[in-house]
Structure formats: structure tokens, C-alpha cells
Length: 214
Image (cartoon, rainbow, N blue to C red):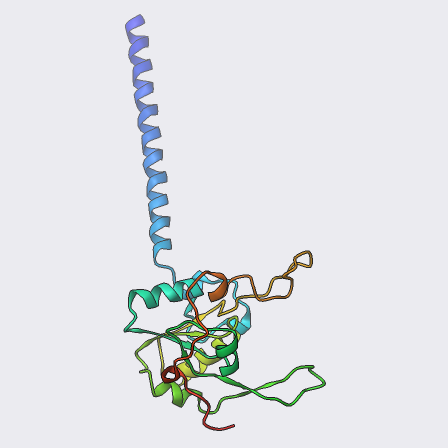
């Protein structure tokens, strides 16, 4: 009788042990599947909370840091376009490798209703990009914080370009939204400058496409 009890206990322990291992395998398999699913996310899925003004028809997005890494890995195949005004490119600074082709131009007539100097579209933007890039090129577009670059990406997409990424935090980054901070309202949250990436004030005229018409 004692031997039979010991045998039943051993059998129960074996079944329990196998059950635990099977569960562990199931958890591991599930974790592995989840890992595989997140290894190759779609571009849109990686940036699910973008403001509407930063979204593009192509749905290709990178941060400033990711854009620099892409350029650094293939500097002959990846082009960085800074679509800010020449004034911003000069006085705020820019990535040394970036072409300056403004998508919007600064005007100098005060708009009292909007309390600002408004901008106007650069009518030569797409044609100027076509002078230095092909529709199959990989292009990173950047402005101050991701709004104008989305506009630029959409214009290029309409012109047949298919590999245009919007640098969603731009050169200066998003503005700080914290009334308790001395940086409240200032563009210091992320972006090329605030990510510690290399930039310069020095101009390379051969990489500047100045507007042909005012």
C-alpha cells in the first residue's frame, strides 16, 4: 500500500512538472511571436500620436536622431533637405550635410491680425529638389519642428517621390509645455539640436537653393 501511494505521488509530480514546462513553452512562444511582430513595424505604427500637421500622405517618419543614423549609415544614398527659410538655415544653424531648399519663404510685411510676419509658398520648391534628387532617392525633410517638412513631403509625394521621410521633431524640436519651466513655450523639447547631433552655422553655397522668384 505504501509503495502504491509513493508511485501515485510520483506520477502526480511528473504530470504537474510537465504541465509547468508546457505552460512555460507557451509563454515563451507567445513572447517570441510578439517580439517578431514588433521587429518590423510599419512606419505609421511607430508614430501613432503625431499631430495632424506633422502627418504625411506617404506615412514615413523619423526622429532627428533616426534621420542622422540613416544618413551616417549611407551618406551617399540618403539626402537631408532642410526646408526652412534661408534666414533660419543661417542664423539658427543647420546640419552640415543638409541642403537648404525652402518650402515656404519669409515675407516682411507685418500682419496685424495674426501679429506676425507671414510666410508664402516657394513656387520653385519641387523643381529645385528635382535638380539635386531623383524620385527613387531616400530623402529626409526637416523644418523647425515637423510641420513645414510634412507639407514639403506631401508636395514631393505628389511629384512622384516615394521615399520621403518627415523628421518629426525638426531642427529645434517641439515647444516645452510646462508653465513651471523657464523654457515654457520654447522649442527645446527634442529635435536635431537638443539631441546632441552635429550642426553648424557655416554655409556651403553649393547646397543652398535660393528662391528664384520673390
